[in-house]
Image 1 (tube, protein in one colour):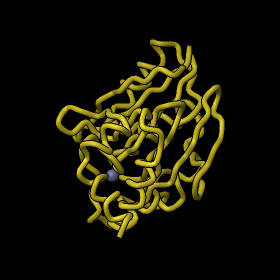
Image 2 (cartoon, rainbow, N blue to C red):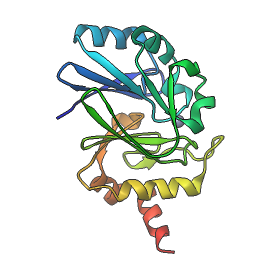
Image 3 (spheres, helix red, strand yellow):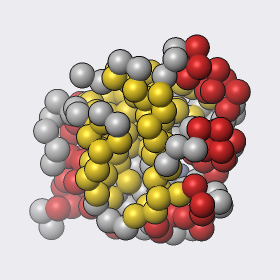
Image 4 (cartoon, rainbow, N blue to C red):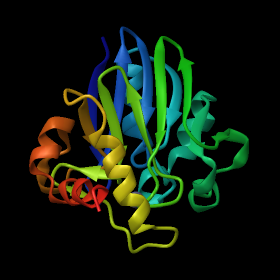
Length: 202
Ligand SMILES: [Zn+2]
């Protein structure tokens, strides 16, 4: 069973997630305050097995290079967002499309969910889904940015809605102080997801 700790860092309410199982760790979207993140890993005596990015926007990757250099940990980013992220290619394991792989004791499932950017993914580990800027509690990410695609967002929201209802959702920002939810709650209360599901039938 994984443990999930949310680190609220940076000026834009970003959520970096520290996922652990015993002393094994993964980081999702580490972008800000690398001193704090490295200090946290060291204090807890954690072994970092890898870094996963939900997409390439600067507020999800900005200072990650420091961390990657420090730990020489593999970092995963979908190919469509590599140019956007501007991280040195040497650190990156780029991939295209859905993936399944293991990092340390963690079974990782990558679901491609384009719409906010072309390379947006959701990262599933056990019953937790890290949705980045694709899905927030009660909202979805902006679709008016370079490489955004509103129609792809609708399909991505339907894709998340089709997952088991007890999947826990952890979003890329804590807008309004909230960053977590469940698939069931979003299907009931998220107007964007509900709209996407309505359009499916037309
Ligand atoms: Zn974004």
